[in-house]
View 1 (tube, each protein chain N blue to C red):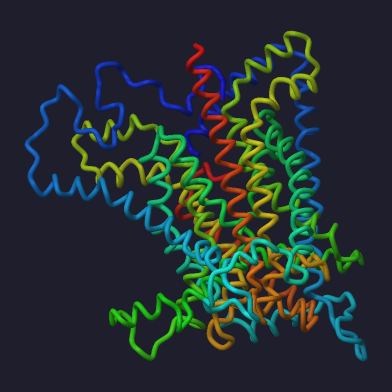
View 2 (view 1 turned 180 degrees about the vertical axis):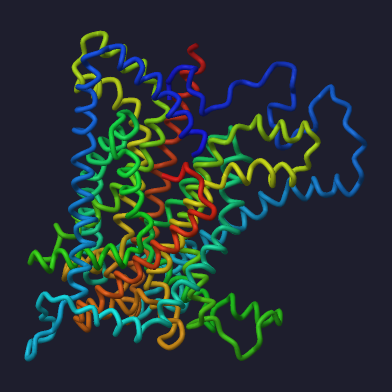
Length: 312
Length: 309
């Protein structure tokens, strides 16, 4: 991505210079630019930004005395936050722990995949295309169906557990279903494409002459990778980790299907059940808001620490 | 892509007389420079280095495909109340995928939502990506950040906040609230996919169009848009996949409307019918075949164009 960004800015100066030379049309073009972007941006303002404010408002509602289930009136009850934080801080921490583990695993598994497609298979457009399609095609099978398949693969009577037990890689009485291991494995599996695609997009734009230069200077493959490829691909790694960590921390399907109800509960499950079943809208909204703010803080710290200017 | 040679994202052809440049990763040190004698350990290291990426990457792809293979195999399982253990091979489920109640209705709903949401997201997202890539205006960085943000927000927050909006406004949950929600996150995927292609467009082609007295709309439709078609197709595929696959946001905003992922999630409690496996496998195969055909066509076209020069 980094070099593409550089390209674009480089070209834009030329384009802008041409536009400036054309004189009067430059301003008209500026207006056309607003015309192009405003429908999409207005859409995002109405259906992404505005809902965050209604979420905040809802999180402060109170239940009037004698109201039916699911009936609330607007108020400024900040106590809602104290109640849900006190009740669900362990689920919140567990969600971030699981998401962090899954993100690290996705990076370890996903980087070689992206490197294989973008660098090793460079020039072989057909194989590259095939592998890229294989990355996206699982979405067509349905995320819930795939997670359910994992549950059956990891089941006690399944082939995998039997094989591991026969090879004495797993103690006889142990099982994988309804454990944290299964939930983290499911999260890793489901969010892997979101790690691979940004890293691939970044590595694909890599200038191979840089690798060659590294080799000409007698750098070993490992040295070239460590000192040239990896630093250049950092914006892709950054985007991939963000696209994996944030959705994983709010996911509830993996925990609901692959976990149990005691010590694998994630915050998404709590929000889902409060919103959809208990009809505790203020509590659910407060938890959602806490989750969003916590992720924004974590992401900001992370981008400050590792970020480059090229992210977005 | 038929843009001119000034596009710098693809590296320039390597200088002549450097055979190593054809494949810098597997070739030895540059020709003509005497390499120092390599110790055996380093040669072994190189061999490992050469194979470690394909092996790890290959294993990762197998990991990615294991559940799909499982779903495919169990789509041939003989029907019973549940589909958890293997009872024997049958074509029955494939011959009648609508056999289980409500499966096909839910698939139809998902397809409709996916198509409508993708079309709207493509229109809004293409204009947005083009505007962001081509025009300098205030708040451009902020706009880019706003577009990235839905992708880095947990789905449960997106779903819950939209639900809070719909509840506060008093909107009836159903098909259109689901479409509104899907357009929101699909548009971000569309913009991210198309924006990098806008960066590789040659502005001089558009200038030529303007010089020939094309109106801005004509230039966009006749010059710019055709160049963006591969990117728009890729974005459309991704957008449709995200919409078709979405469960969490849909679960919050669809009310009683049943999409395919919702059907599977609800069915999971009592046992997913093998017909759902048929649908999942068929969708996977259709997507795979459709994209491979379009790849072959564009590959052939590239070869023909290279040959005609």
